[in-house]
Image 1: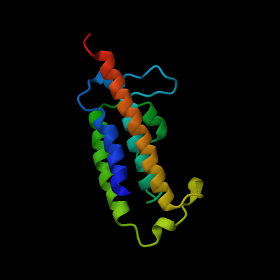
Image 2: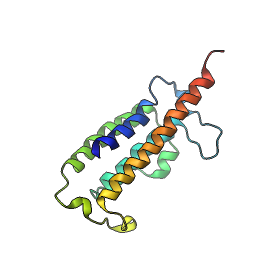
Image 3: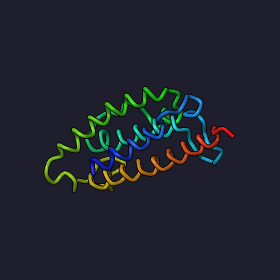
Image 4: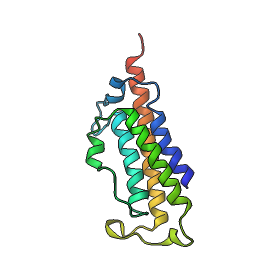
Length: 145
């Protein structure tokens, strides 16, 4: 499960490869659509919250609202992902026996650790698909005619 989560977030990050700042900041006209910058910032932040905050009990390094107001450049988001990825691997590789069945405290109390990991994968996969579609749309928009 760990590798699948990492692959899905990596898909979001890879969707930003070789794009300029204007392309990364472009938002499709569809209601509730987001730019690649926002999708990348949010997907990294959500993975952090799902695993490092909800499962490991760490403090979040940012908020969801900050992710959706993303003004950072992609290099900063990539750097954050590199750091978060190492911490996610450490947490998931060192879960004690039986921990997957534990219920999580707080607002996610109806979820086990395993269910939170599955949710994290599904969430990242959803945004990976959105990121790849957004990338394809912006490339088509900017293609020479």
